[in-house]
Amino acid sequence: MRFQAQKREQRGQGQSEKSNFVTMKTLLLLCLCVYVAWAQDNLDYDDYDTGVKATDSNATAGAAIDARGHRPLEKGRDYYSRNRNVPPPISGGSRYRGRPTPAPVGGRQVEEKVQQPDAGGCTHASEQMGVLCPTGCELKTALLKQEDDVKRSIRELKPKVEDLSQSSNAIFNYVNTMSNNLRERQRILGDNNRVVSQYTDQVEEQHSFIKETVDTVFPSNIRVLQGVLDKIKQKIEKLEKAIQTQKEECKEPCKTKCPIPVVSGKECEDIFRRGGKDSQMYLIRPDAFSSPYKVYCDQSTQNGGEYWLGNDRISQVTKLGPTEVLIEMQDWTGAKVQAQYRQFTIQSETSNYVLAVDGYSGNAGNGFLEGSLELFGENRTMTIHNGMMFSTYDRDNDNWNPGDPSKQCAKEDGGGWWYNRCHSANPNGRYYIGGAYTKHMAKHGTDDGVVWMNWKGSWYSLKAISMKIRPFFASR
Image (cartoon, rainbow, N blue to C red):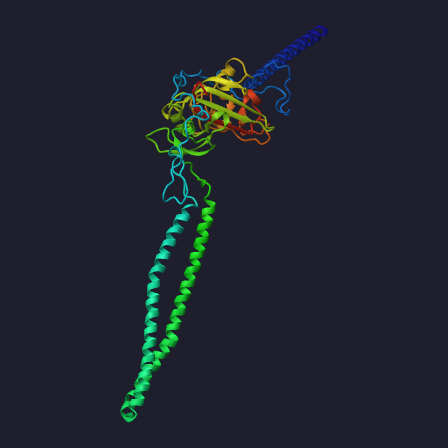
């Protein structure tokens, strides 16, 4: 009996050990699955050896490299298309030669401005600059014409006044004569009083009316006419003073300020060569079959250029001939850098505005051709913008699973741009005041700020950025 009890006890211990082994095996498999899942989640970010240890998710941005300008490949879930074969930017012979040098001192004489007979002493600008806008000097011409009209009216009025005065004198003499005749008749016709009395009342009434007219009405009319003459004289004096004032102001050539410049051309370089050297709004017409439109020409920065106009118009300008682009940017401390490409072309809408650049120079970093320098290998290739089509919220043309609505750079990064998968530069992104921001502040957890990664990295939004284009010619 003791032997059987020991045997049963040994059998129970063996079953217990087997059960413990199965439990340990199950726990080991569970730990392995958890580790694989954790490693799979961390494939969304590239961990590069930079000498800085990664911190937890609550650490401040910039403690370790977290370059989110790209979207890392996740095997089995999405794919990446390499850069497409695109036509190179337009190069070759420029449509412009070097700008002409100013004439030497004492050389060609400056053509004198022609005095216009009806311009009121004002002179016109050169024919190349167009026609001057109206100035205050034209008031002088109007006043001179008005003075002639007033003098003509006075000359016509004076004979009438003199005729009226002569008529008044004649009537007055006639009344005096009638009075004398009446007294004489009274003396002569003393015996005929009864006959004369029949007409005396009528004559006296006429005499009274005429006398009242001569003594009251005529002097009153004359006083009114005299008042009119006095007012006309005062107006003439005021006009003479105004004319004299205009003469004093017009001793020097008149200047004008116009809201629309009188110079126009194909683009800002053409306007500069025609004399429009002030930085302001101008009318340009790069395509003869399209209507002209206003642009702001910066004629001072590196000898001039025009600001971004939209893809359609930029495409028209860049296809006129070799074109270069200048990208200027500024951070929140006031520091400024730039990136310049001496060859720059945007294709038409039929090709979705494909970007082609070459010939980089500057101190901001060559993101268009080299991508983000914070990344390596295929991850950097994903951030090259050269050869990309333009993508917007409603037109997905990037290299990140084309056609997949859940994989769109324009939606995640907040703007239209030549996205690859996705960017090293994002000038049309969200504006974060102060510069620094984190993925927790971003709408989709991505670097959707105004980013230029090769200068400030993924998590710094620039204060200002601008793009200007102009024709390229080597002698500039």
